[in-house]
Image (cartoon, rainbow, N blue to C red; front, side, top):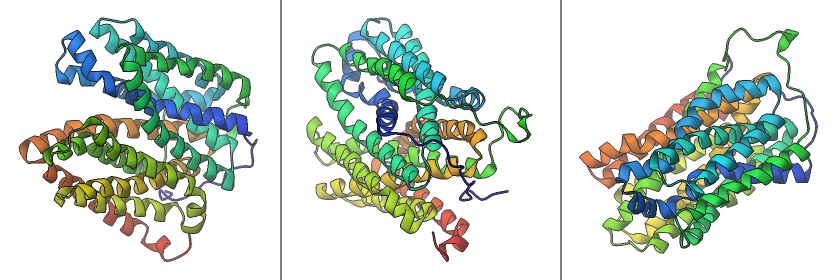
Length: 398
């Protein structure tokens, strides 16, 4: 059994050009846009439709559930039939189902549209990741993944601002942003190479529906924890700031935007860092920074440190997003990349979906600082496990 840092050498394949890379990076931002563009209008929707806070929250999270469930099946389909057609269809589905909120006024219909929308988002996450892994090799692949992390982080800053601006018109208006999926779907059909799927060894069909190596599952477990910790910060940092008297919405947004900005900058430097240190060291460094950042949030009362801590957390996310994606993609042969990246998507969005469900009761039974302390302890435990797992490779080179 290969360890989670083992790599399957990638065969030299077609290189993606700049136009293709640009389209894939723009499409990659749509997964973070899925919920981010609606955050500013959730309260407006809740008031207009007479919803409870929990019911309104499902408008932001329901797509994550269908994304997590459908992801592995989508990855298997892409391994068998290729990426271009499914990715284009997923972008079109994303655009149509997402934009349904422009006209829907019934809450059950809105939730149903969000569940369908999640399937499109699953196709986009897996298809864009798989395309970047297949079209680029070596240092070019490292740069592409770093750019992907930066694009996703910038989307986390940009789309809430767009949603807030459009929300001044109507709570229906931000749903129009999802229509971006339509021209991107057409661009994928035009620009993405129509490469044939990679055959399984021996030319036969795999006997098992899913055959992802155990090492990939370990890496996806790390991604699950990373997503859970990230959403722990996003959900509870505003509440913690309110406890110290920071309640202005724009000021609160600056704290989370700083984290995304740091993630973007670190993503641009990922390729040289990977070449110098190697992905295992970068993942270890990520959990180390998260442990420190979450510990600061657990004990500090100084507003300035509430700005420093998300910045430190953003360093770790900027390293972990491309590193874990590449480690997953490079550990499996080409004919299994769709399955592997789809399981990564499931881990990512399940972590996001589960995080407030798990941490909410902890906060209710204790306090917000204690909740951050629990998160810091979790990051620390994983850090120790990683140091043990990679102790032999840490003695050598990257």
